[in-house]
Length: 244
Image (cartoon, rainbow, N blue to C red; front, side):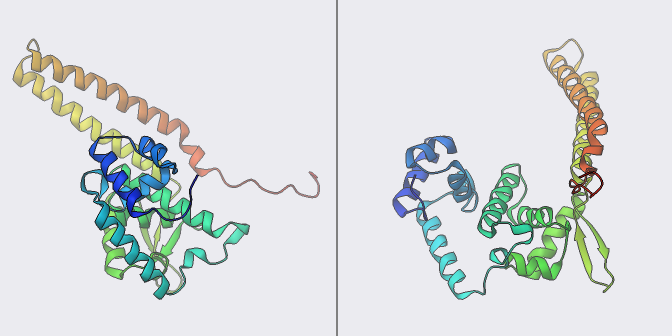
């Protein structure tokens, strides 16, 4: 399997594959590249609808020149716990890409990935700026979005610096927010049944939608409540001398 950066010819093949509505995995197979490479390439260069091979190639060359002139990327510094710095960096890009595919804007996804993958689960604005090599305004905008979505919270540390924190409960809260959103759709759909008539095709469609979403929402809520404690499970403790 070839390594290294994508060539201009490969980017042209990616553009052709997207135009033919091929899946990322199929494009990757034809280029003998990992699917994650194709996914990252497309998502960081306009997405499936906006990808252009010439612009993507120029953007990559620009990033390469900027990296050569820029200070060392903090993510390539020695990692705690003996982690491979390059593997961590690549995984952070993958994590970011997956969240972007779920609908989260790019900068918000990058900030969320940085917070989630830090051992403390918290970083200051200055730490995020240094880590991501972006402007303070970009970090501030991303944090405002994530805070509004309930994905992060803010608190002051002992030095009065504002820290941004990803709680262990963040995915539970996300599931509950999704369930609440579904419940609103259920109520609105049933209101439509009364307006359009329960015996009409449109009314039946709305009632079936309400029943489906009501069942799914209730199932998600029940499962989230039952599994919530999993999010608070700590790392395994080394055996003590007594147990050893």
